[in-house]
Amino acid sequence: MPLYRQKGGKVWWMSYSFRGRQIRKSTATTSKKVAESIYYKVKTQIAEGAYLESIKGKNKTFVDMAERYLKEATPDKKPSSQRDDIANAKNLGKFFGKFYLNEITADLITQYVLKRKKKVGPCSINRELAFLSVSFNKAYKLWGWCRENPVSRIKREKEPKRVKYFSEIEFSKIYNLLTEWVRPLVLLAKNTGLRKSNVVNLKWSEVNLNDRIIILGAEVMKNSNCLGVPLNNPAWDVIKDQKRNQKLHSPYVFCKANGEPYTGWGVYQAFKKACIKAKLPDFRFHDLRHDFCSKLVQAGVDLYTVKELAGHKDITTTQRYAHLSKAKLKDAVAVLEKLS
Image (cartoon, rainbow, N blue to C red; front, side):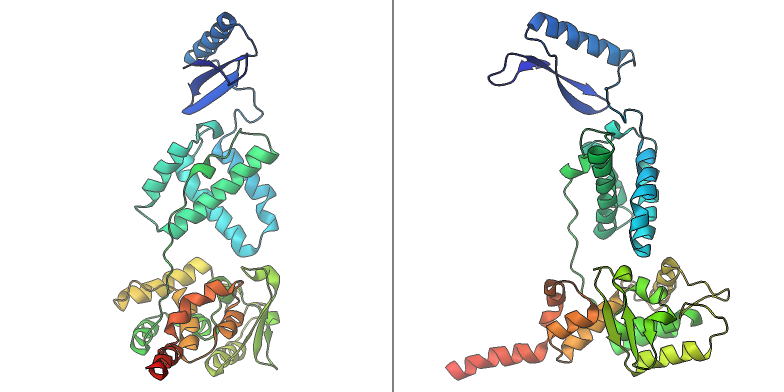
């Protein structure tokens, strides 16, 4: 019904569709005849293209929202998160482009998700939806550009809990096919469990050469907690080689000829290319971190220690590797022998 009264109320309300969104608004009158006149006037204005809702951001587009968010909110984030925001805004912009904010409905977002599923996995889609959601929250709650956050109606994609590690043969095949410059980064990641961003942007100021330990501040960590990772012999050899072969006074442990660090995307691509050549395309750079945790658990290291070394904020994240502790599992079922 285009006109209705709320339960127990006397004022007439009207319901109509505008730019793909259902609008419900009070006519501010108790007269049905006057309410009908207001309703048909609004419908006529919509048909003639003259109607605009009285809202501050009525002419604001997705591009306007994304640009303001990147300018006001993104600079306060960590460098890695800043890069993610920029990438997410770019990907979302290809679809939503110059849609007005009140044109971006839950249905339109669903269409975006279906389209993205053909190209990327659930993790990427969820990160993009998260950026869209926080941007809309700013536009809705702080800037007054829209009346709601349409992303709140969208169910997030289910992300598979991936635990994938390398056999010696698999890693050897991939490593031998890597380009020379990326090999030390891969070795350090495999032996420290550090995330790609922390390896790529590792600075000499974060390496304690005397105590053989890498200490990362909270500002560069995903969970905002400091992390100290001791260097085993393979990792220590990588650091020594980088120090020995350092030709520039670059603050970065791994850098190009001009002293600038490599890009995370470049490292990801170089590793992925070697995986494909080795006919092991399902592996990715982040699996080096899974490998680190998995091998520690398989060697009998307790989950709490693994949690501290990996820098997990919550033990539940570490527990995904619990099933790999074969010795403890065998001891557990052996208890039954005493009961029989």
